[in-house]
Length: 173
Image (cartoon, rainbow, N blue to C red; front, top):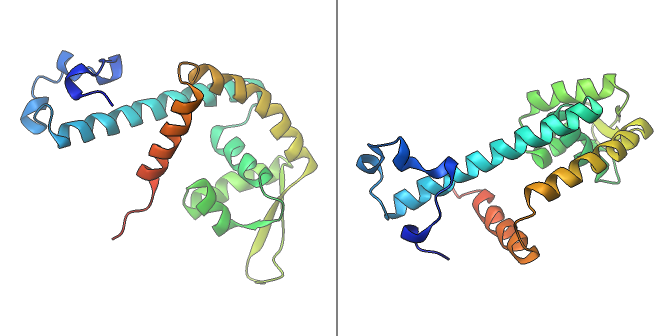
């Protein structure tokens, strides 16, 4: 891993250009400085990917990012799932997910079915139309993802995934 002083500056991380008081908050080379720069880079990368993927897929299919991401999560499982289980898998709050599911159901991409384990809840399953939409999204999304990550080797992709998983791991309270 490169030391802070030799890190290449990117446009998104070149604080020296405009943040002339940054060092008053985060002295250069300290752990807090490195943590701030990393989290800022994560945010910029996530925003850039979110914008690129959403615009690309929406232009080709009309689906919003929330809808195609949710649809993929449902397509990846072989049994119907409850809303709470799905909310955990896609990392969103229940009310937000319900709005997304309502739109997917209106489009005929999912259906809600009775939950034999709990009559108070329903399960979600993908429809044939939903599977067809996943088949339309994937060939649009995969090349965009490949282009965004082309500068990274397979080993780097694996290493970054492991690091991101460590960062995303829930912290003890």
